Length: 362
Ligand code: HEM
Image (cartoon, rainbow, N blue to C red; front, top):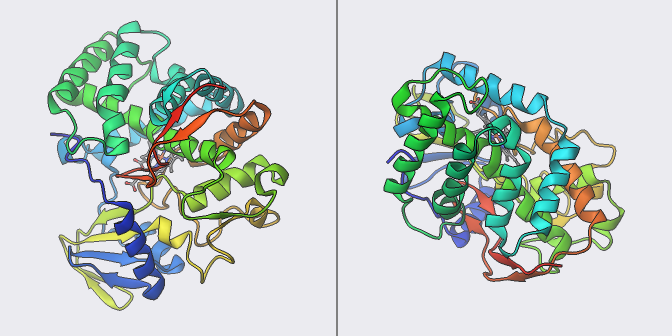
């Protein structure tokens, strides 16, 4: 199965990892991962000047096999060109309106809202069949992967949807989608959908909870924090405390030394963004939601790595910050959403998203 099992590390496990990271900057886990939670070293590891790690992101590894570098580059250019043609503010307005009009599961609402906002670059505005396929993919496969509500993704459904997406692409549904082998074209497209939609939707779930919930996940709120702050600072502080990509994993290709440890071929290096971005050594009042901390400081704090860096880093990073800031502004201007929390723990899979909630309209 090309999307593999759904890794639902539980929230308790994530907090345990965080506590361990605070005690020790570099350590090896029993599973063979080398965890690096020191900002300078983490950046050095991810930039990987000597190319000792595999950097092809999971997006571009259909069936676990990395696509050839020119294909990855073409896909990244396609994503980039799609974003460059969009206005983040207009996209955020579409997404916030779509969430406001939704009822039921918050994650589902955010997935569909972000897909609606990115309909043009994804080709969903041109092709009804592709739109229907993506809707089913988000509902029947990706929602379970994001919330961890199933142990494994529905393989048969996924393969059927990938074949349908592949056929629509062969008919030119998504403009300028790069040349990819026919047998994986549909799957690669659905992976591109997850790049466009997945982390953004997770960030939107957190942003909505920051505005609406009195009970923040593992954080305290500074009084007046949201009302007084600039939307960009709200976006950055949301990404700091609740990074959708909560860890950056890189397989080791060649043995080498990382700080005090030897990383061996076959190991995995892990940069735990969640732990780094809440580390008390690098952040004052690390667990306090305080957008004001970003005022007058560069957004590139050394211990802030929500989009990773180096080869394989997010091509949507700067767009995402502008988009999320615009979403914060639109949410602030809109009447509050009625939200009912259904679980205490957040959803921890490959993506870190808010606890499950039900949207009940305004
Ligand atoms: C809060 C939102 C987002 C977060 C947290 C995020 C995070 C990341 C991270 C951590 C990676 C590296 C993957 C890895 O380590 O294997 C990545 C890669 C990527 N992201 Fe994002 N991302 C976000 C939004 C977006 C958006 C909106 C787009 C485009 C529409 C996008 C497109 C991509 C692409 C294409 C890659 C692969 C880059 C490559 O192959 O070099 N991301 N993202």
